[in-house]
Amino acid sequence: MKEHFHAIKDKYDGFYRKMMKDGMLPMRSTDTGFWHASINHEVFEAFQKIGIHKGKRFLDLGSGDGSVVLIASLFGPKCVGVESDEWLVMVSKRIQGELKHLPKVPTASFINQDFMSYPVHGFDFIYLCPDTPLYRGLETKLLDEMKGKLILYGNNFFPQHLKEEQSFDVNGTRVGVYKKE
Image 1: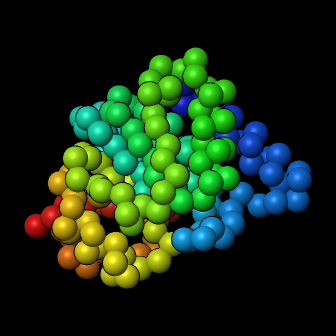
Image 2: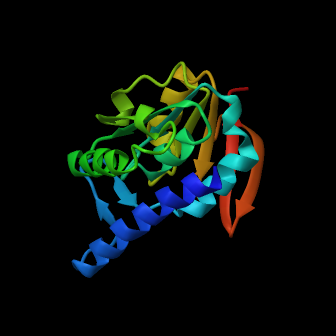
């Protein structure tokens, strides 16, 4: 699995280098939020610790360039990324196509939609790297619809009404796993 992860990481590292060579940073505002590149080795390590291989369905809310979804696919669950920015969805699908030789990567899907209107029930793991406080509507959606667990990546925003099941740091980045009480 590590070999396949490194293929994904190398592909995204090349994409980010090209963006910077073209005068862009691997981050930008979108119509519904802010995208920034994930630190892929941290995501991979977090998924190993959490054990996402035990789940059957994985959802990334605000999937950006798709790296998290493709990494999650290596662990076995059916993976879906929901992203409102059309360009980022196009990037996700292009890179997925370039990595179609890797097991399970071709089975991931990317949906161009605002995740606030996408149903989240039926997923064992829901991944989120929030750019705004969850109390601005998302936590209510999760409380109403979520059946599985929320993986929250980052040090900034935390749920107020979900129960923390597990948390740990990966290179100084906090990862928390939450469920409904």
